[in-house]
Image (cartoon, rainbow, N blue to C red; front, side, top):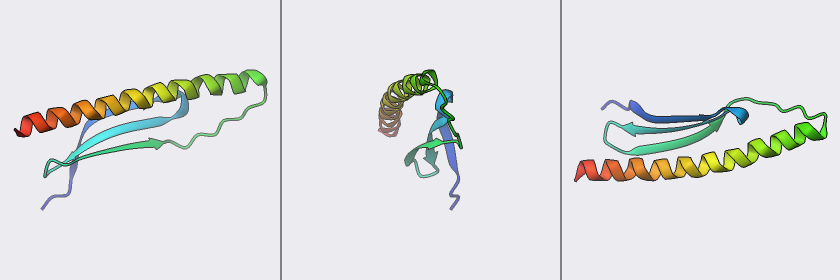
Length: 82
């Protein structure tokens, strides 16, 4: 049995280095992951902190969109199997 998984969706939220991927195994199971690439924020000013806050708000929206995408991929997979 081949344990390879095929990446079927990938999205990146570049400001904070997050990557969302959905893979499908050979037996049709979906797996989703969110990872953050190694990032370090150096904040020296109030403006830096406000920029980080704005990026964090954007990250929340990106994560909600990623959850909706995962639901859509799962529905498509179920419909394709039916």
